[in-house]
Image (cartoon, rainbow over all chains, first blue to last red; front, side, top):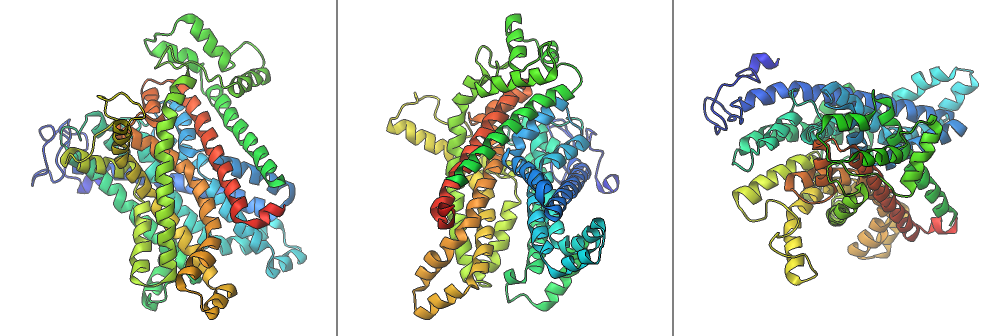
Amino acid sequence: MAPLIAPAGPNQRVARPHEPPSAEHVLGSTRMGRDVLAQTIHGTRTSLMVGFIAGLVVTVVGVAVGVTSGYFGGRIDEALNLLTNVVLVIPNLPLMLVLAAFVGEAGPLTIAIIIGVTAWGWGARVTRAQTLSLRQRDYIRASELLGEPAWRIILVELLPNLVSIIGFNFIGSVLYALITEATLEFLGLGDPLALSWGTNLYHAQETSALRVGAWWEIAAPSLALVIFGSSLSLINFAVDEIANPRLRTLRVPKRILAALRPVGAAE
Amino acid sequence: MVFLLRRLGFYVAAFIAAATFNFLIPRLMPGNPIDTMFAQSGTVLPPESLEALKATFGFLDVPLPIQYLHYLGSVFTWDLGLSVKFYPLTVNQVLVRALPWTLLLVLTSSLTAFTIGSLAGTRAAWRRGGAFDSFGAPGALMLQAVPPLVTSLLALSLFSISLKWLPTGFAWDPMLDLTWSWASVWSVLYHAVLPVVTLALAQIGGYLVTMRNSMINLLGEDYITLGMAKGLTDRRLRLVYAAYNALLPALTSFAMSLGAVFGGSLVTEVVFNYPGLGYTLYEGITSRDYPLIQGQLMIMTLAMLSANFAADLLYIIVDPRLRRA
């Protein structure tokens, strides 16, 4: 999509350096005379891709660890739970900094994987807690007595009941990944040639855009992050209310809830 | 006591895990990072220091397990090696110099956010569906989705550069000698306003929602209804009966979120040129100062573990069930 809607190539020099927003260049230009709008639009691709891939990795690892640990219990649970708690208690960003620093100039995909493998702790904990409580239910007992194999109980009986938690976890992780990617790239650990909101901010900082008054260069990727991030968190708020009726504010008309339901389910 | 001892054991395990991670990562990457580091930067370190650095990180001609023990030994004697960027200072000296600033930012902002967020959450839950709840809760969540990176950049641009109300960086006025005089303290506070506020903004939403949700779940309990029937004042019921019990999940999320706050503080410090861990680290990253980058993981982990331990102690105060165990 990006080439179709962007006014210029992201690396084309189409204007004078640090031109303020005008009719021709709606969001102004960078130090290198590149169009900020074009850069932001092209950056969206990478940022969203990293967000979704990392979110997916976080969710898959988290659910796998959480369900295994909650369902099998005993030694397995103890080991996995210890692992989860260790992952949770070691601060994420410093850990990622070490990883990214040793990888060198990490491309977007590498960053997505780095985020994925370090951030799954929270999801695993929540999934485990829910699995533990589901495991006590009669219908799971019944399936066990019927002699259903463990994989079938997990896939057919447990997972469908975990969908709301998994969805919540996924959206939260995408949001987290998006922010973290921007942060890592801003700190200069990303590949400076990649085009994403984070590298845009990095270049703006490197060329001291703010100090020379070129606020538009910072504002564009920042606003993109804010808008995308808040939409995700609002979706999550709705998912939470649908999954947990107690939290629902009573004044929400049924119509709105009905409209929200497919969104929550699709995520 | 048993509870505390078990937690302590866990913290030691977590610390070792972080050290193990530091040990393994350089060895999984191709080549020897210490040699690479020396090859790529016109470095000021004399060859003896190179040898010392290799010894600290266990890059010796011995089998891997012994290298590992060697490295653990270095870590537990808090020998984190020499900083490349700030030679001749050791990583330890560099980090200890920077730590208080980061702690100042992290603790002030977390406590502020915790207090404001929890009180607002209590309010939102009490008048559920009211105007404050309907706009406050989703609004706080949206605020939480705004990364500290963005808030600090925008705040810097608005308040420091455009309006010139607050300083653009550093932790105190460089014209002053830092002492315990009023002028110094005032200058430090003045410079901390923007970083603290931006950091706190990112956290308030989380506390608000945690508190609101756990309050709402509690408000359905019988003892609340009983309290109402007894004719207790709203205020007493809300704060002493409901909020106090809803505090446990909030405390958990407080301890858990500290890691994120440390992360956020790294970014905020870079934006505001604040001389804490984050800024020091940023300088380390730009010059690929591996010992420094690894050292900050250890010190951040240690800070995080101490915070968790403090939260454990608070738990014991808040939840009498743990005292019996």
